[in-house]
Length: 315
Picture 1 (cartoon, helix red, strand yellow):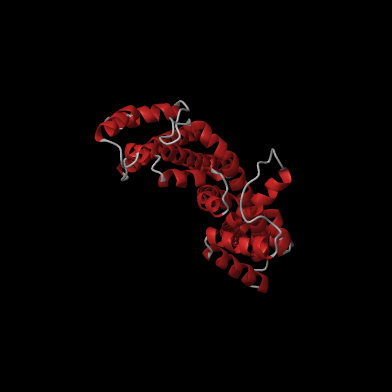
Picture 2 (cartoon, one colour):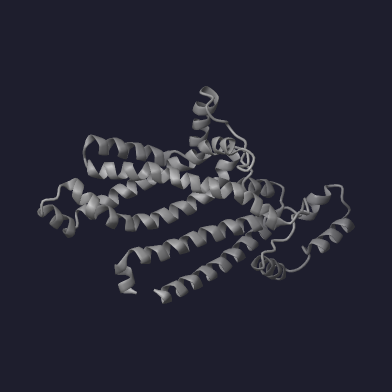
């Protein structure tokens, strides 16, 4: 197990370095001169050259990458080209919106998916199974942003129960904060819940065909008792892997939802920075998102080994 964790940490580090090179190279190839954007179209060539030298844009990109990567490793993401503010504190402030939003989305997805998946498996090929499977298929086909627009139309515009957008910090008004997070979190949760419902249903049905469940039923347990005593625990193992992957996708999905609901999170900041060609801010933000997704996958891989003793024996 220790060897596996060390090896997985090595893969995590290599993946992070590779991702940082790709992010830096791709953003360096994007059209648009940050110096031209800062000074405007009326800037003289001499002033542009001076500013490029001040920003370090006249150096070869491997040198610029080495400086940027060294700073990021030390927690220094540099300064925004446009505002001049330190990027690290800007990202930390925006994460206070993005992380709770992603966590609430996942919690709501689990609250919806677990009972629905179990119910569909327990009533396999019955009316309940058909209804839940059909609803989950529709949920998978709905884009998160479209779900958000639909929820705003119903619960904000027509019923007036919840705000259509905006954000209130939890330190100022916890109730207003909760009201501002309900619809964005639910928009993220609908698609994730639909996917997880299908995985939970399939995983339980597969486990229920195993010999140890048949043995339990041969000893007199009903289908429901065999499911709860033996099926759920074993069915949870593959679901944990999917859960980690879905959380990573959900974290990235906040970029769209934050713009739909005007939430001042990391996703909204990166889109605004990209439109203004504030490339250093974009690089830092994308790097943080990449780190989060790779770290989630690392935790899931380790948790998978902890939960399933067969994998520990194999290693």
